[in-house]
Length: 156
Image (cartoon, rainbow, N blue to C red; front, side, top):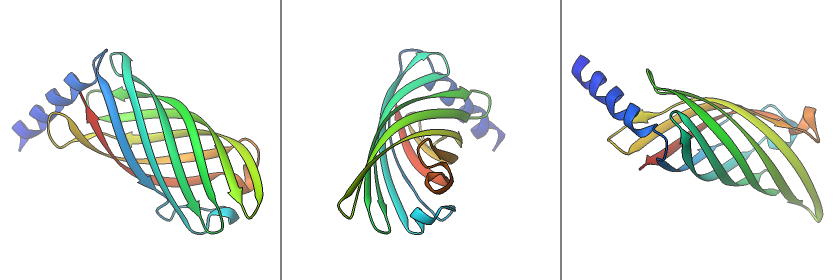
């Protein structure tokens, strides 16, 4: 068992090097919402990026959210810092979101810090659970949410 842990850590270290590429997808909205706007929520997100330096990923993302009464599309950029010794990462992203809610179109900006873990299934594929706080800059009280994200990543 100890040998398996050492081998998975060595594999993870090699994937966080400068010049590597990342592609990922995630689903969120799994019940930790507290705002009035998001009693029911399902989010699908894709992201792609590259490591500018060892342990430092910069990415772009596209997100689709279905809320109880409206749909939201989001474009954003962000970064992650990986702690090689254990697979944890700290991330932050910023995004522009457009909502089409019953003929009322709104625009919003979000800042989202997150804490996650990259668990390597093999040399390239990860399962990435994360918790996040999606802070709305336009409607702080009703537009901000706390959530759990489950993602999959491919490092090459």
